Image 1 (cartoon, rainbow, N blue to C red):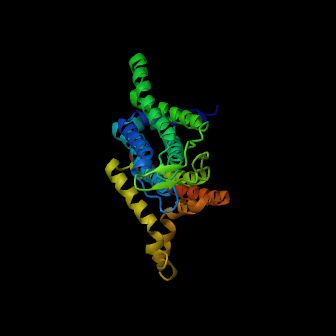
Image 2 (image 1 turned 90 degrees about the vertical axis):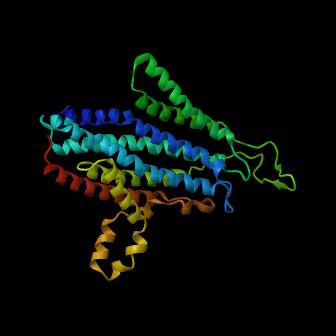
Image 3 (image 1 turned 180 degrees about the horizontal axis):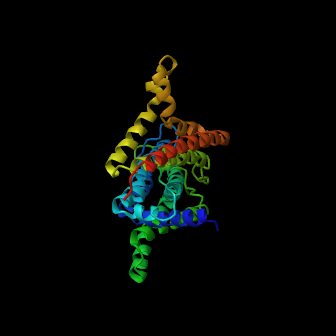
Length: 335
């Protein structure tokens, strides 16, 4: 193993171990997963397509949750270590700042990818649970709730037996149990026994009753696009966390999030005539490229070649932000 690998991998691994130990991160992830699981019975309207509002809302929760998680994780990985002097102790050894920053981003990205995977599984389960009109597929929701509850119980038992940190243990147990719960629901069809639903004064005939409820695999590329956006937010949060605490970092990332969502409306027309608007339009991340909920309407799909182009755009933008972060970090005094 080379010296570069010998310093990069332990730093990245240490980041992966330390970040989930924050109780705030566990609370945030648990709240988001449970909220996605509650959407099938919180939203009763379907706008002509069963599950549409549940699916769109769940993806919005994942998108907004990525913003909140990126600021929390980045500040826990960088800002807190700089304030405590841990970063200075690491950099006093033969470890370059480039390698330090790259390892931090890689470690935080692993946590973000795990979170995105958990949200994707929850979205798939919630979508199947809302696939029928006027019905809730509890067979798909109960395993989700059980995975969250089981993760807390198992983490508590492990903490009692071995004194391992509760927060990080619960985080990883939740990821594993959610995957097992999803795999178990693949054996279920969610078919109803009857096709007539009595509403008292009238009856409703469900055309899908008695039929299996398939997994909407078309959600995978749409959730993958949101994952790319999450990694872009993670790069911006890491840049801000070098000098700022959680609240300012979240404020800046939130501002970039809102401006990026409105960039087409605010700057697209002006970019044709004004140079400043054109430059700002290019620099601002256009989050609309990663929000493909409307493309799924009516059984639509997101083409995989579009996902590949979006991945290139996300990678180029994140790399540019990381280069700016490195330039700032090189001029920063770390004690």
